[in-house]
Length: 341
Ligand code: F6P
Image 1 (cartoon, rainbow, N blue to C red):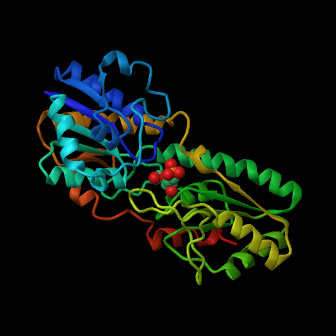
Image 2 (cartoon, rainbow, N blue to C red; image 1 turned 180 degrees about the vertical axis):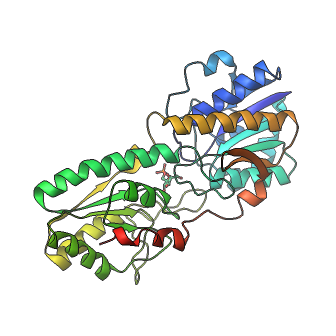
């Protein structure tokens, strides 16, 4: 059997660990052949397929990014997309795909699987918002990077007695903001799941100054003020219809200064959260996902996604995993109320 491997959507630390693990077990235990698809679904539209074997995956475990490249291409938004995908698979004798992606890439995989293409999904994203899995790989690394940034910002905030706003990624879900904010001892954490009241944020900021501490506000890029719309710099959309975010952090700092008279500055962590070497946990999770994904391929259990439940790796139907995003539940957020303000 020949298996194609592709990585789609925003990159994330641990993608290479999955590719390595899929290929190592597939070749050594099951004598499978592999090809790599370049740049996610784009490679299948463009017939851009490269050889993939054990030598090509040597040494990539600790490397960030993806050796296969990635893109936010949606084949269903391109003329004749489905036919071109099928043609490339046939041209290279590919019997099955391992698709490593987040909500968008796996959404496409769900539809392609309905159309009869043999594939198995592996959930990745620093946002941790794929349903059906307790964690996606990449998330732990991103939280570690954001937490370290918050730790560093505390000391400079205290030296100048200013409010520092840290904008982290998270378009529809506040997992990074919540985990890093709690780990870094933030005073205000704002997530997309709960619109915030700017007056209340300013009160929380002032309470912190009153006891001689400099406040740290962590905000997810998709968080929105109560009365307003999502704050964006750029309204252009990608092929999955997502608006390019960024701007809420700057807006917050301006409002805090205008309403409290205190100096406030913003740090936008941006793609730093996605770059570089994966944490030990992400390497471990990505490796396990890869091993279980190739088992599913070998057993021809197509149309499923591997997922972490507790300490076990399970399989669930892709359609179930991609039906909706996993968001922060109100009760979880409320657990931390005592630290806010
Ligand atoms: O999809 C993951 C993610 O990290 C989101 O949190 C963020 O909105 C998006 O990627 C930004 O990615 P890019 O700038 O590469 O389109």
